View 1 (tube, each protein chain N blue to C red):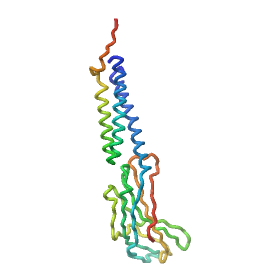
View 2: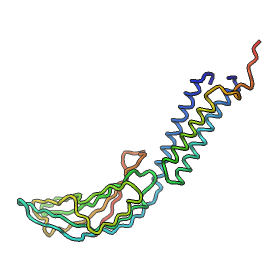
View 3: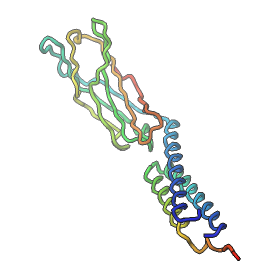
View 4: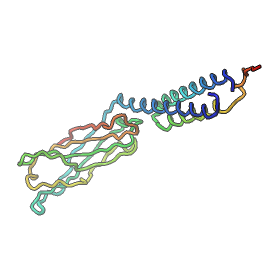
Length: 67
Length: 161
């Protein structure tokens, strides 16, 4: 992963978790169900894991040129 | 963020912080919930008022018509409804004894209409129960799923004596 990729990964994971948590809270409050809130939240966390942890191609778009 | 496990660590930490914020937010929304119960509790009959072994014992039949559905929030795990008899005996000691209680575990169950519920626990006094004036107190105690303080709210209403 190059440096730009690392910055992108950190930005992506924060955004995904915050969005799904907030959305989950509002949705769960609307349907009056804790399960709905927790399901949305866990989906967001899983999505964050899958999109940011492995070394995907979009994290290597600016390779560091040494020598 | 330069290794896989470094990123996993970051995601897990963010997830736990988000979970704490969610739990706090969900339990705080409980404070803004307005509870408007409809209650109508009266004594249908005094089933037995006898003197047993030198003490007075009383059993009651209670007519309950209670609609607590508006008190049910998304943070409620169960409602503990209890009816207590509060009276003063000639020796001037104030008593507050539970006569009937019930656990309500879902919102649809919170609409209770029981025309004749037998009291679960008898009142027993060495003397002075006969002719004592009893004040009935109906309480419902909300047990929350997420607590932010150790004290859950207990709402009290005086029923018809």
